[in-house]
Amino acid sequence: MRKILAIVSTLITFTVYAQQGIDEYNNAAVEALKRGDKSKAIELYSIALNTAKLTLGENAVQVASAYNDIGSIYSSMNNYSSAVENFVKAASVYKVALGEKHLSTAAAYYNAGCMYSSMQKYDESLDNHTKAVLIYESELGLTDKQTAESYYNIGNIYIRLNNPDKAIFFLLKVLKVFETEYGAEHEKCAAAYNDIGDAYARQYQYSKALDYLFRSLSIREKVLGREHADTADTYALIAGAYEDMADYDKALEYHLKAMSVRDKLLGKKSIKTARSCYKAGFCLIKKKEYEKSLGYLTKAMYIFEQNRDSEQSDLASTYFMIGFAYANQSDFYSSLGYLERALKIFEKIHPANHPELITTKQNIEAVKTAITNKNSNDEL
Image 1 (spheres, rainbow, N blue to C red):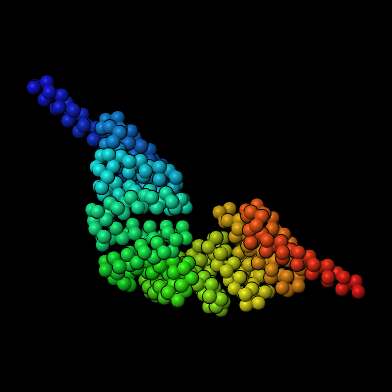
Image 2 (cartoon, rainbow, N blue to C red):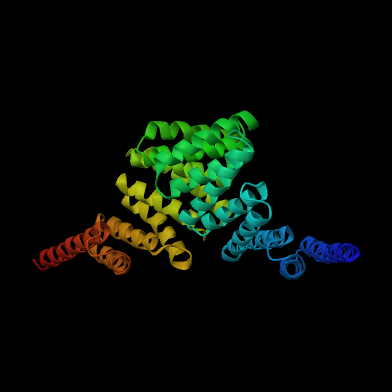
Protein backbone atom coordinates (compact mmCIF):
# COMPACT_ATOMS: atom_id res chain seq x y z
CA MET A 1 0.00 0.00 0.00
CA ARG A 2 2.84 2.38 0.87
CA LYS A 3 4.48 1.65 -2.49
CA ILE A 4 1.23 2.50 -4.28
CA LEU A 5 0.86 5.74 -2.33
CA ALA A 6 4.47 6.62 -3.08
CA ILE A 7 3.93 6.03 -6.80
CA VAL A 8 0.75 8.12 -6.77
CA SER A 9 2.56 10.88 -4.88
CA THR A 10 5.40 10.81 -7.40
CA LEU A 11 2.98 11.00 -10.33
CA ILE A 12 1.14 13.92 -8.77
CA THR A 13 4.43 15.73 -8.15
CA PHE A 14 5.54 14.99 -11.73
CA THR A 15 2.26 16.28 -13.13
CA VAL A 16 2.45 19.45 -11.05
CA TYR A 17 6.00 20.17 -12.23
CA ALA A 18 5.00 19.41 -15.82
CA GLN A 19 2.06 21.81 -15.58
CA GLN A 20 4.30 24.49 -14.11
CA GLY A 21 6.69 24.13 -17.04
CA ILE A 22 3.83 24.31 -19.54
CA ASP A 23 2.45 27.40 -17.78
CA GLU A 24 5.83 29.11 -17.94
CA TYR A 25 6.06 28.62 -21.71
CA ASN A 26 2.43 29.73 -22.17
CA ASN A 27 3.04 32.88 -20.10
CA ALA A 28 6.20 33.64 -22.06
CA ALA A 29 4.21 33.21 -25.29
CA VAL A 30 1.60 35.68 -24.05
CA GLU A 31 4.36 38.20 -23.31
CA ALA A 32 5.81 37.68 -26.78
CA LEU A 33 2.39 38.41 -28.26
CA LYS A 34 2.14 41.62 -26.25
CA ARG A 35 5.45 42.68 -27.85
CA GLY A 36 4.03 41.78 -31.26
CA ASP A 37 6.51 38.93 -31.76
CA LYS A 38 4.17 36.31 -33.20
CA SER A 39 6.91 34.00 -34.45
CA LYS A 40 8.41 33.81 -30.97
CA ALA A 41 4.97 33.17 -29.49
CA ILE A 42 4.42 30.25 -31.89
CA GLU A 43 7.83 28.87 -30.93
CA LEU A 44 7.01 29.06 -27.20
CA TYR A 45 3.52 27.57 -27.59
CA SER A 46 5.09 24.76 -29.64
CA ILE A 47 7.48 24.00 -26.76
CA ALA A 48 4.50 23.99 -24.38
CA LEU A 49 2.72 21.65 -26.80
CA ASN A 50 5.60 19.17 -26.98
CA THR A 51 6.09 19.32 -23.21
CA ALA A 52 2.41 18.55 -22.67
CA LYS A 53 2.55 15.63 -25.10
CA LEU A 54 5.61 14.10 -23.42
CA THR A 55 4.52 14.60 -19.82
CA LEU A 56 0.71 14.47 -19.90
CA GLY A 57 -0.02 12.45 -23.01
CA GLU A 58 -1.16 13.09 -26.60
CA ASN A 59 -4.80 13.58 -25.59
CA ALA A 60 -4.35 15.96 -22.64
CA VAL A 61 -6.43 19.14 -22.52
CA GLN A 62 -3.20 21.16 -22.43
CA VAL A 63 -2.23 19.67 -25.80
CA ALA A 64 -5.53 20.80 -27.33
CA SER A 65 -5.15 24.25 -25.77
CA ALA A 66 -1.68 24.63 -27.27
CA TYR A 67 -2.95 23.65 -30.73
CA ASN A 68 -5.75 26.18 -30.31
CA ASP A 69 -3.36 28.97 -29.26
CA ILE A 70 -1.02 28.27 -32.18
CA GLY A 71 -3.97 28.20 -34.58
CA SER A 72 -5.18 31.57 -33.31
CA ILE A 73 -1.80 33.19 -34.00
CA TYR A 74 -1.61 31.74 -37.51
CA SER A 75 -5.15 33.03 -38.10
CA SER A 76 -4.08 36.55 -37.09
CA MET A 77 -1.22 36.24 -39.60
CA ASN A 78 -3.68 35.21 -42.36
CA ASN A 79 -1.87 31.87 -42.60
CA TYR A 80 -5.14 29.99 -42.86
CA SER A 81 -3.77 26.59 -43.87
CA SER A 82 -1.51 26.42 -40.79
CA ALA A 83 -4.31 27.79 -38.61
CA VAL A 84 -6.85 25.22 -39.76
CA GLU A 85 -4.35 22.39 -39.30
CA ASN A 86 -3.97 23.35 -35.62
CA PHE A 87 -7.68 23.95 -35.00
CA VAL A 88 -8.56 20.54 -36.47
CA LYS A 89 -5.99 18.91 -34.18
CA ALA A 90 -7.38 20.87 -31.22
CA ALA A 91 -10.90 19.64 -31.97
CA SER A 92 -9.68 16.05 -32.22
CA VAL A 93 -7.93 16.20 -28.83
CA TYR A 94 -10.72 18.12 -27.08
CA LYS A 95 -13.17 15.49 -28.33
CA VAL A 96 -11.18 12.75 -26.53
CA ALA A 97 -10.21 14.77 -23.44
CA LEU A 98 -13.47 16.61 -22.75
CA GLY A 99 -16.09 14.84 -24.84
CA GLU A 100 -17.91 15.30 -28.13
CA LYS A 101 -20.41 17.81 -26.71
CA HIS A 102 -18.01 20.04 -24.80
CA LEU A 103 -18.01 23.74 -25.68
CA SER A 104 -14.22 23.73 -26.20
CA THR A 105 -14.71 21.04 -28.85
CA ALA A 106 -17.39 23.18 -30.48
CA ALA A 107 -15.15 26.26 -30.41
CA ALA A 108 -12.35 24.37 -32.18
CA TYR A 109 -14.79 23.19 -34.88
CA TYR A 110 -16.07 26.77 -35.17
CA ASN A 111 -12.55 28.15 -35.60
CA ALA A 112 -11.67 25.50 -38.19
CA GLY A 113 -14.85 26.36 -40.09
CA CYS A 114 -13.91 30.04 -40.19
CA MET A 115 -10.45 29.22 -41.54
CA TYR A 116 -11.85 26.96 -44.25
CA SER A 117 -14.20 29.80 -45.30
CA SER A 118 -11.23 32.16 -45.55
CA MET A 119 -9.58 29.56 -47.81
CA GLN A 120 -12.83 29.36 -49.86
CA LYS A 121 -13.14 25.66 -48.98
CA TYR A 122 -16.83 25.93 -48.28
CA ASP A 123 -17.72 22.24 -48.05
CA GLU A 124 -15.11 21.69 -45.32
CA SER A 125 -16.22 24.91 -43.64
CA LEU A 126 -19.85 23.78 -43.64
CA ASP A 127 -18.90 20.42 -42.15
CA ASN A 128 -17.05 22.04 -39.22
CA HIS A 129 -19.65 24.72 -38.57
CA THR A 130 -22.39 22.08 -38.60
CA LYS A 131 -20.50 20.06 -35.97
CA ALA A 132 -20.11 23.20 -33.88
CA VAL A 133 -23.75 24.27 -34.14
CA LEU A 134 -25.05 20.84 -33.10
CA ILE A 135 -23.05 21.15 -29.87
CA TYR A 136 -24.13 24.74 -29.28
CA GLU A 137 -27.79 23.85 -29.84
CA SER A 138 -27.49 20.97 -27.40
CA GLU A 139 -25.49 22.73 -24.69
CA LEU A 140 -26.53 26.39 -25.00
CA GLY A 141 -29.93 26.27 -26.67
CA LEU A 142 -31.41 27.46 -29.96
CA THR A 143 -31.60 31.12 -28.97
CA ASP A 144 -28.10 31.56 -27.55
CA LYS A 145 -25.86 34.20 -29.16
CA GLN A 146 -23.10 31.69 -29.91
CA THR A 147 -25.58 29.35 -31.58
CA ALA A 148 -26.77 32.30 -33.66
CA GLU A 149 -23.18 33.12 -34.69
CA SER A 150 -22.87 29.57 -36.02
CA TYR A 151 -26.20 29.89 -37.85
CA TYR A 152 -24.86 33.09 -39.40
CA ASN A 153 -21.69 31.39 -40.64
CA ILE A 154 -23.66 28.47 -42.06
CA GLY A 155 -26.05 30.86 -43.82
CA ASN A 156 -23.11 32.77 -45.25
CA ILE A 157 -21.54 29.56 -46.54
CA TYR A 158 -24.77 28.60 -48.28
CA ILE A 159 -24.70 31.97 -50.05
CA ARG A 160 -21.16 31.17 -51.25
CA LEU A 161 -22.37 27.74 -52.37
CA ASN A 162 -25.21 29.49 -54.22
CA ASN A 163 -27.91 27.75 -52.19
CA PRO A 164 -30.06 30.77 -51.27
CA ASP A 165 -32.97 28.71 -49.90
CA LYS A 166 -30.86 27.19 -47.13
CA ALA A 167 -29.04 30.48 -46.59
CA ILE A 168 -32.33 32.28 -45.90
CA PHE A 169 -33.48 29.48 -43.57
CA PHE A 170 -30.43 29.91 -41.32
CA LEU A 171 -30.13 33.69 -41.62
CA LEU A 172 -33.74 34.28 -40.54
CA LYS A 173 -32.97 32.23 -37.41
CA VAL A 174 -29.96 34.46 -36.83
CA LEU A 175 -31.95 37.64 -37.27
CA LYS A 176 -34.53 36.60 -34.67
CA VAL A 177 -31.81 36.02 -32.04
CA PHE A 178 -29.78 39.10 -32.94
CA GLU A 179 -32.83 41.39 -32.81
CA THR A 180 -33.69 40.03 -29.35
CA GLU A 181 -30.15 40.10 -27.98
CA TYR A 182 -28.78 43.29 -29.53
CA GLY A 183 -31.74 45.31 -30.74
CA ALA A 184 -32.90 45.85 -34.33
CA GLU A 185 -30.49 48.75 -34.92
CA HIS A 186 -27.31 46.81 -34.09
CA GLU A 187 -24.61 46.22 -36.71
CA LYS A 188 -24.97 42.46 -36.26
CA CYS A 189 -28.59 42.80 -37.39
CA ALA A 190 -27.33 44.90 -40.31
CA ALA A 191 -25.01 42.05 -41.33
CA ALA A 192 -27.91 39.58 -41.20
CA TYR A 193 -30.20 41.91 -43.20
CA ASN A 194 -27.41 42.35 -45.75
CA ASP A 195 -26.91 38.63 -46.28
CA ILE A 196 -30.64 37.86 -46.37
CA GLY A 197 -30.95 40.52 -49.07
CA ASP A 198 -28.08 38.93 -50.96
CA ALA A 199 -29.79 35.52 -50.75
CA TYR A 200 -33.15 36.87 -51.96
CA ALA A 201 -31.40 38.56 -54.91
CA ARG A 202 -29.96 35.15 -55.84
CA GLN A 203 -33.54 33.85 -55.88
CA TYR A 204 -34.46 36.74 -58.22
CA GLN A 205 -36.80 38.12 -55.53
CA TYR A 206 -35.55 41.65 -55.98
CA SER A 207 -38.23 43.55 -54.05
CA LYS A 208 -37.57 41.40 -50.96
CA ALA A 209 -33.83 41.69 -51.55
CA LEU A 210 -33.94 45.48 -51.70
CA ASP A 211 -36.16 45.65 -48.61
CA TYR A 212 -33.56 43.80 -46.52
CA LEU A 213 -30.61 45.55 -48.14
CA PHE A 214 -32.01 49.01 -47.43
CA ARG A 215 -32.67 47.98 -43.82
CA SER A 216 -29.01 46.97 -43.62
CA LEU A 217 -27.89 50.18 -45.29
CA SER A 218 -29.93 52.35 -42.90
CA ILE A 219 -28.19 50.79 -39.89
CA ARG A 220 -24.73 50.72 -41.41
CA GLU A 221 -24.81 54.36 -42.50
CA LYS A 222 -26.00 55.32 -39.00
CA VAL A 223 -23.76 53.05 -36.92
CA LEU A 224 -20.66 52.58 -39.09
CA GLY A 225 -20.87 55.64 -41.31
CA ARG A 226 -21.11 56.04 -45.06
CA GLU A 227 -17.38 55.61 -45.58
CA HIS A 228 -17.07 52.09 -44.14
CA ALA A 229 -16.15 48.89 -46.01
CA ASP A 230 -19.32 47.09 -44.87
CA THR A 231 -21.47 50.02 -46.00
CA ALA A 232 -19.74 49.86 -49.39
CA ASP A 233 -20.55 46.16 -49.64
CA THR A 234 -24.24 46.94 -49.10
CA TYR A 235 -24.09 49.69 -51.74
CA ALA A 236 -22.64 47.11 -54.14
CA LEU A 237 -25.38 44.54 -53.44
CA ILE A 238 -28.11 47.19 -53.89
CA ALA A 239 -26.47 48.16 -57.19
CA GLY A 240 -26.39 44.52 -58.25
CA ALA A 241 -30.11 44.09 -57.53
CA TYR A 242 -31.00 47.20 -59.54
CA GLU A 243 -28.69 46.02 -62.33
CA ASP A 244 -30.49 42.66 -62.51
CA MET A 245 -33.79 44.58 -62.68
CA ALA A 246 -32.34 46.57 -65.64
CA ASP A 247 -32.64 49.83 -63.68
CA TYR A 248 -29.21 51.02 -64.79
CA ASP A 249 -29.56 54.59 -63.49
CA LYS A 250 -30.09 53.34 -59.91
CA ALA A 251 -27.49 50.62 -60.37
CA LEU A 252 -24.90 53.15 -61.53
CA GLU A 253 -25.70 55.46 -58.59
CA TYR A 254 -24.94 52.73 -56.04
CA HIS A 255 -21.97 51.25 -57.91
CA LEU A 256 -20.39 54.71 -57.86
CA LYS A 257 -21.07 55.03 -54.12
CA ALA A 258 -19.41 51.65 -53.51
CA MET A 259 -16.48 52.61 -55.75
CA SER A 260 -15.93 55.92 -53.98
CA VAL A 261 -15.78 54.32 -50.53
CA ARG A 262 -13.60 51.42 -51.67
CA ASP A 263 -11.24 53.80 -53.44
CA LYS A 264 -10.73 55.76 -50.21
CA LEU A 265 -10.55 52.83 -47.80
CA LEU A 266 -9.00 50.01 -49.80
CA GLY A 267 -6.96 52.01 -52.28
CA LYS A 268 -6.86 52.38 -56.03
CA LYS A 269 -5.31 48.92 -56.49
CA SER A 270 -7.99 46.96 -54.62
CA ILE A 271 -9.85 44.23 -56.50
CA LYS A 272 -13.11 45.41 -54.92
CA THR A 273 -12.43 48.92 -56.24
CA ALA A 274 -11.76 47.44 -59.67
CA ARG A 275 -15.01 45.46 -59.63
CA SER A 276 -16.99 48.57 -58.74
CA CYS A 277 -15.28 50.42 -61.62
CA TYR A 278 -16.11 47.55 -63.97
CA LYS A 279 -19.75 47.52 -62.88
CA ALA A 280 -20.04 51.29 -63.34
CA GLY A 281 -18.62 50.92 -66.84
CA PHE A 282 -21.02 48.07 -67.58
CA CYS A 283 -24.04 50.17 -66.52
CA LEU A 284 -22.86 53.05 -68.71
CA ILE A 285 -22.62 50.70 -71.67
CA LYS A 286 -26.19 49.59 -70.98
CA LYS A 287 -27.12 53.31 -71.02
CA LYS A 288 -25.24 53.58 -74.35
CA GLU A 289 -22.77 56.06 -72.85
CA TYR A 290 -19.80 54.31 -74.44
CA GLU A 291 -17.13 56.99 -74.20
CA LYS A 292 -17.85 57.57 -70.52
CA SER A 293 -17.83 53.83 -69.84
CA LEU A 294 -14.27 53.53 -71.13
CA GLY A 295 -12.92 55.69 -68.31
CA TYR A 296 -14.22 53.27 -65.66
CA LEU A 297 -13.44 50.12 -67.62
CA THR A 298 -9.87 51.21 -68.33
CA LYS A 299 -9.34 51.96 -64.63
CA ALA A 300 -10.66 48.48 -63.76
CA MET A 301 -8.40 46.94 -66.39
CA TYR A 302 -5.24 48.52 -64.98
CA ILE A 303 -6.05 47.25 -61.48
CA PHE A 304 -6.83 43.72 -62.66
CA GLU A 305 -3.65 43.62 -64.74
CA GLN A 306 -1.47 44.68 -61.81
CA ASN A 307 -3.12 42.63 -59.06
CA ARG A 308 -1.93 39.04 -58.87
CA ASP A 309 -4.89 38.05 -56.69
CA SER A 310 -7.45 39.04 -59.31
CA GLU A 311 -9.25 36.33 -61.26
CA GLN A 312 -8.48 35.93 -64.94
CA SER A 313 -12.20 36.03 -65.72
CA ASP A 314 -12.38 39.57 -64.29
CA LEU A 315 -9.66 40.77 -66.64
CA ALA A 316 -11.09 38.94 -69.66
CA SER A 317 -14.57 40.39 -69.04
CA THR A 318 -13.08 43.87 -68.77
CA TYR A 319 -11.19 43.46 -72.06
CA PHE A 320 -14.44 42.27 -73.66
CA MET A 321 -16.47 45.26 -72.44
CA ILE A 322 -13.77 47.71 -73.54
CA GLY A 323 -13.77 46.06 -76.96
CA PHE A 324 -17.57 46.27 -77.06
CA ALA A 325 -17.51 49.99 -76.14
CA TYR A 326 -14.95 50.78 -78.87
CA ALA A 327 -16.99 48.83 -81.45
CA ASN A 328 -20.05 50.92 -80.65
CA GLN A 329 -17.98 54.04 -81.29
CA SER A 330 -16.87 52.57 -84.66
CA ASP A 331 -13.26 52.33 -83.45
CA PHE A 332 -13.00 48.81 -84.81
CA TYR A 333 -9.22 48.37 -84.68
CA SER A 334 -9.12 49.23 -80.96
CA SER A 335 -12.13 47.00 -80.43
CA LEU A 336 -10.49 44.05 -82.16
CA GLY A 337 -7.34 44.34 -80.05
CA TYR A 338 -9.26 44.13 -76.76
CA LEU A 339 -11.63 41.41 -77.94
CA GLU A 340 -8.67 39.26 -78.99
CA ARG A 341 -7.10 39.75 -75.55
CA ALA A 342 -10.37 38.64 -73.97
CA LEU A 343 -10.53 35.61 -76.27
CA LYS A 344 -7.00 34.53 -75.35
CA ILE A 345 -7.95 34.35 -71.65
CA PHE A 346 -11.40 32.84 -72.19
CA GLU A 347 -9.84 30.05 -74.26
CA LYS A 348 -7.61 29.20 -71.29
CA ILE A 349 -10.30 29.20 -68.59
CA HIS A 350 -13.46 28.06 -70.41
CA PRO A 351 -14.51 24.95 -72.34
CA ALA A 352 -15.17 25.41 -76.07
CA ASN A 353 -18.96 25.61 -75.62
CA HIS A 354 -18.92 28.29 -72.91
CA PRO A 355 -21.24 31.26 -73.71
CA GLU A 356 -18.57 33.90 -72.97
CA LEU A 357 -16.14 32.22 -75.37
CA ILE A 358 -18.77 31.87 -78.10
CA THR A 359 -19.98 35.48 -77.70
CA THR A 360 -16.41 36.81 -77.87
CA LYS A 361 -15.71 34.90 -81.09
CA GLN A 362 -18.95 36.20 -82.61
CA ASN A 363 -18.03 39.78 -81.70
CA ILE A 364 -14.55 39.36 -83.18
CA GLU A 365 -16.03 38.14 -86.47
CA ALA A 366 -18.52 41.04 -86.49
CA VAL A 367 -15.72 43.57 -85.89
CA LYS A 368 -13.54 41.99 -88.61
CA THR A 369 -16.48 42.24 -91.01
CA ALA A 370 -16.97 45.88 -90.04
CA ILE A 371 -13.26 46.58 -90.70
CA THR A 372 -13.48 44.88 -94.12
CA ASN A 373 -16.57 46.86 -95.05
CA LYS A 374 -14.99 50.12 -93.87
CA ASN A 375 -11.85 49.45 -95.94
CA SER A 376 -13.97 48.67 -99.00
CA ASN A 377 -15.94 51.91 -98.58
CA ASP A 378 -12.70 53.87 -98.13
CA GLU A 379 -11.38 52.46 -101.40
CA LEU A 380 -14.53 53.59 -103.19
